[in-house]
Image (cartoon, rainbow, N blue to C red; front, side):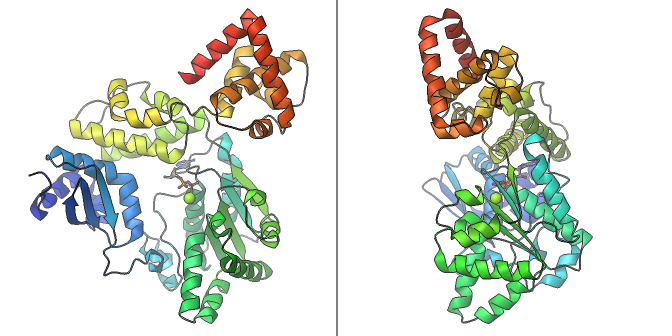
Length: 456
Ligand code: ADP
Ligand code: MG
């Protein structure tokens, strides 16, 4: 039956999926899927909105693929798309259409916001050193009290929780201050709305609408860089709201000063409020996130056994971003529940070999600093700090050397992460260690040991 899955078979598969993902997930995410076709290894499903498509693809894509393979279909990829005859307008879904949306949202049907992900709340956000400041700032804004910093600018690398925090703010505001008009959307959707308004000659409506919100959240604002008229309109919206003392919350993948092709006046306005960054995750935070995920999964898969050490292994090995970490765990649980086995280290390595391989060489600067500090028994703060005594300077140089060897960071980037040192300092350190490595057997041995533990 290769390549010939029938609607009937899809119906049966759906029943299996129901058992695997549980009633709630099924109703929200799987039921709306319509099997369209299977050809050349690609299974295509129609979805009512792009949002659902993206969500299903990220969270259940692998599972659906496994299921299809298990009935003998040759599937390399599953694809979710909005059928051509329904215009793809995810952003036209009002906030109220979010899964299990709060009732308060119903009154704001006209606001062109993006749907909020029901899972992205403060409750489910695990706080650790790398994100505690961002979390605290987000919580403060979510109280809906008097505006103290405007805008709140959250930035950080992909998958570190920016969108999660923004949705959490929106959910919390709906609870705390149902009287406020809260609008969350991505910068891309902002542009889309803007272009649409221009095209339909509805600029007045557009302006009025955006100026009538009490809290405006724009996600991934780096997207409008280089898009001149969108930037211009954003700037005016921004100013109008700030003048009325309305709260604005912005996220981006880098600091305002580092977004290229952004007008200076916008950049400086963005820097006016509170700028906080989400740092790359550390081992403890990753482990915490995994543990909280496992607790959630327990409800879905009550019988599943998890061997000791698996979570620690994952937290150690997958250091890229939280999304990858979560995806790995989802896949692991889905797989284990399909084959009905305990999640052992072996199963983990089998099931996630591609993810593990992909993150193999991604050793972070922070990790190197931590390991080297541990090895030489100095404090991490001294590793990064200004003191120049030999007992600190040498380990610091060793860490710099390893960063140059084991990461793809440039010398200036490395310098920045070592307490804002100049790239020439890093270059000097790296050279010095290269020399010592050739002369000093102990150093050569230390380097070898450190490299091996870091790559393990
Ligand atoms: P970003 O917008 O920064 O790219 P997201 O907010 O989309 O990242 O986060 C990616 C995924 O990781 C989401 O599923 C989110 O719930 C999860 N995540 C990120 N940070 C945390 C955290 N501290 N606690 C729990 N989940 C997190
Ligand atoms: Mg995001």
